Length: 267
Image 1 (cartoon, rainbow, N blue to C red):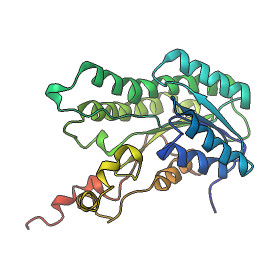
Image 2: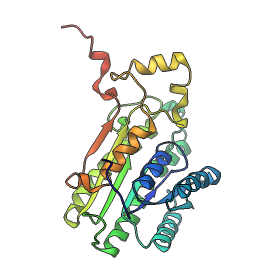
Image 3: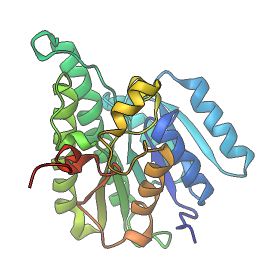
Image 4: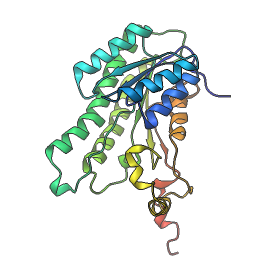
């Protein structure tokens, strides 16, 4: 039986496409009221909200740059005004700006860190303050749940993506530190680290047969991941089913981080 999120309020950043979109649909299906954050992608975000509303769910669309402190404050205020509070934050918004390190600009470095790491900090801080303001209620065992979307590249180095890998490595320790700091107040903080997932952001890695063949050589399980694989994991971490789980990163990668090139090694 699917885990229930009935009556809970979830804010999902970067929810107009990809993993965030799949998560918004699944959480709404499981009874949550969903705030769909996007940044200048209003048409797609509104389409997600309309589809949720068509099936009887409740959704709010919010345009906000997660790296902007004032915008994040306005976003949380809008969620509380519409739904009364917040129970779940899914820190999903993220970008890539790859470049060879010797030619990577400060702007490329800074923008990726601003969105992928500072954005997670700002949203987590705002969510935690709302959890503490509201206090315990009967909707969930925990005071609040935060799920940060990381990447297998929080541990696997990635040439030409120094900014991205650094942001995800930082996110891992942010998650672990927040979990340690707030566990005593019953706020759970976890992460999901996807491997290769079929999304628009990485389509170059899978959209041609040759690219897919090369990609599958790195995935022992033999298939590319789908956004639903990640959404189901996020929903579980946000539910009472995982109430004793905090400070953990669930790696969802079909075995990519198992160093598959060693599977046929000598000896």
